[in-house]
Length: 439
Ligand code: PMP
Image (cartoon, rainbow, N blue to C red; front, side):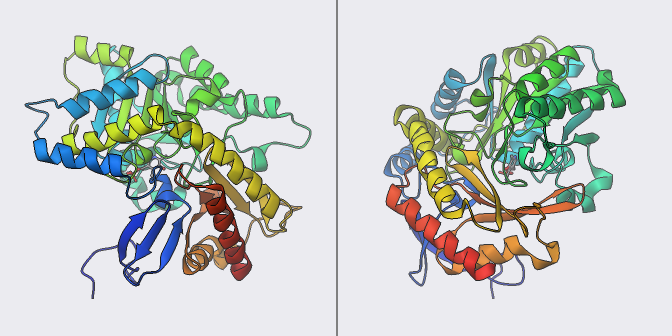
């Protein structure tokens, strides 16, 4: 019997034995194509020698020193690298151990900024339905995954949720993409006016929605309007790029493609590429300055912030992404993947939508392609598909989303950027087989 308190308490999963490129192997020698990089984590694939070497070298120097006493060369280098490539106005990197921690830091930075600037009456957040921002109480409280929230609802931060920008399901007949983008963004203004804009700290959104909607980008113009609304009411804009950042969508930051700069952007997953647990909240100079010149101290912190070994991994990853051409490769292989998915599933009776950017792609699965009728949740299509794909040696990331009680099944693909055209063919073949097993 396993004593590991795993995600699924009923069945013990296979033991992973080794990884090589886009493949993982279990201890019985079975080979799995990592078609989703776990959960959009392993952007460099497995066994990358440069990242492994960087970690080993740091371990040989010093594994850990507390940030209460020291900074470290890898933390400084990683922050420099991130800020050099960050959206306009972003000037500081707060380095943490993962996505939820990055979002918690972002929420607290935003609240403390309001306190430092004399706006203590700002105590609430606005976010979107069908979103996921992490599992700690603050991140969960702002997230719009109702199923995950339900048990903890009474003990969470104050937040309210507007509809996401969901072209496939929420754009009305006869409405242009542009009109829809404006209408969807204006929901933020309606919500600010409903709750009182002077009470809102920040609006939080994923530029490309991941875990709850499967690689769902906003339509053109949506985020520009969102930025305008935030500015009009002095509400901060926090973009959560924990899943879609670090080259996943074909640019280092996903929001580059939406033409907006946030006040805070969170990253994790691809930042450590799975080699070390690491995340970051990157904030504007205005936020940093207000805290430095105000109380002089960000009232937050964890033992492992700026962990030197994790930063050494992150630094090597970001160097490979930016200088090694891997962001560009994500964009290029993403096009190949999109073409392969469109060719294979474009007319599939149960594939309603194929969407995404870069190597961040998804299929939305429906019972009826014409009416967009989702599958009956009782059928558990997403969960069954995950098992069927795994049996065939494919790791993909199917999930059920929720919006106003309506469920939708999606399968998310986020392969390592190093994937080849042949391996994309293998991925699509295996996925087609798994869909046949299930449907
Ligand atoms: N934000 C987003 C957009 C995410 O996708 C996730 C993880 N799926 C998180 C935050 C939380 O990250 P972590 O699981 O590393 O805490």
